[in-house]
Structures are given as structure tokens and as C-alpha cells.
Image (cartoon, rainbow, N blue to C red; front, side, top):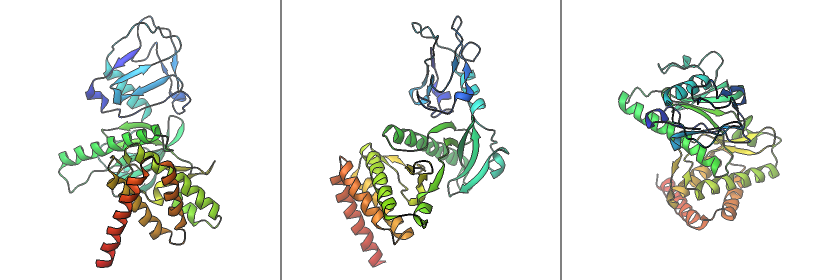
Length: 317
């Protein structure tokens, strides 16, 4: 059964993707016989994590579940489906932009210049909610347009990064009306804190550098610039020690070597400032980037130029 969504309702669900082998929505199964998208005569089959795929970028919802008769294509009303998904999957938020928007089950983790981050439970799993708040110095119409565009851009960047093979949080739900994106919560610590631990060895630093260099090369080769590469935007998982890339709020698509060079330069400056005694981390990142990137030559040449310009500005003042 294929449910076609109009573009007006696609904006309310930017990305919800649960693929075979994934996890996250098994506890929120939908009954196809009684649900909003039920087709007459279809056998009842619960939609679980292994059988539900929703992709608003394709402007359609594809349902593949055991018991469905595949020959026919059915078009049903999109409104009930979208509203049911939004109300079922998302905790309650109100639209006044205050920090009390999140329900009592949510816990504030941090706040930056653009958004607040909350920890909560989402469909039976640990998750975080990143909520962009209104900027009072901007015209309301302009602020709403910019906030929505950046929200959608961040969700798309995360999904794209995961498709490129980069370890990044899975997007669970996007509420464009409340400027919220829900993601899986990475159990671990920021790389910034991991590097400051007394137990951090040279071998750990070298491993972090290799994983980060490989992740950045995948992003850049895939035409995606992170835009805010710092040791605060990498997480080290508790269970296996793997490095996960987070915070794609400033990411944007680009194939320009200059943009990629600036991306690397920002990371170098961040490491030198926050970890002056561990600069070998960046050396390992560059060495791995050169080994794994297919377009390393143009990027690293441009990086050298950007670095030279930065040093010249520092000298002149």
C-alpha cells in the first residue's frame, strides 16, 4: 500500500526513517486494519521497526508488511496519517518558545546560541530533543522562515551523513511547527571530555584521530560540509568507544574545496585552543583524511591556503 502525501503535510514530517534491522518504533506499532491508512480487505498486520518506512522527502509513505496484497496501489487521505504520527510519536510542546515547553518527562541538557537540548524518552527509548527558539531581534515572519529552513537543513544533513556511512544520531521525528528535531541519544561523553581524562592514552588519541579523519572524508566526498567541527561535536560511545559526529546545525551541501578546507581549519583551531598538548590528534586526522578521501589533494591544498591566510591575519591583527 502506498500513501501519497501532499507537500503541505510533508513539511510536518521532515524525516522519519525506520529501516529493516533498525530500532526505535517497535513499541509504537500501528495496526493496518484499524489505523488511519487502512485499506478495505487488507489483512491485519502490525507495523513494527522491521516493516515501516516513512520518507517525507519522497513525498510518500511506503508500507511493506507481511499480509499486504501488493498488486494494487491505494491513495488515501494524508491528513489523519500525518496527525496520528505526529501526536503519537512526539512529546507535548507548546508554541510560546519558553524553556517550560517540554513536558515534565524531559530534562534540560544544554543551551547554545541557536537551540536548547533536552533529554527525554521517545517511543520507549532514550532520545534528545533539539528545540530552536525564537530570536526576538528578528521580524517574526523572517525568524520563522529561517528557523524552519535551518531545522529542515539539519535533519537532512544528519540523514545524508548516515547514508554516507558516518556514525551520527538517527533522526526519529521532526516537528516543524515547534522547531524541534528528535534524535536518538548517544550514550557516551564528548570527545572534549574524553581527551581530558587521565586514562586517555596516546593510542586512544590516535584511534580517535583515525575515526574522525575517516568520518570527515566521507562527509566531504559526499558533498557535505559540517560547518562546526570541534571536539565538543564528537561523542565517544560508552559501549565500544566509537566516535559519533553530532550537531549538524551549521552543515550545508558543498563540493567546493575552499569550504572543505575551512572545515578542516576550524577543527585545527579548535584542537589547538582546547587541547594544546594533544595536537597529534589533528595530525592523525589529516593523515587518515589523505588516505581515505578521494578528493584529498584539492581539499588539502586549499586547507594550506586557508591556514596561511589565518596565520597572516593573526600576525597583522
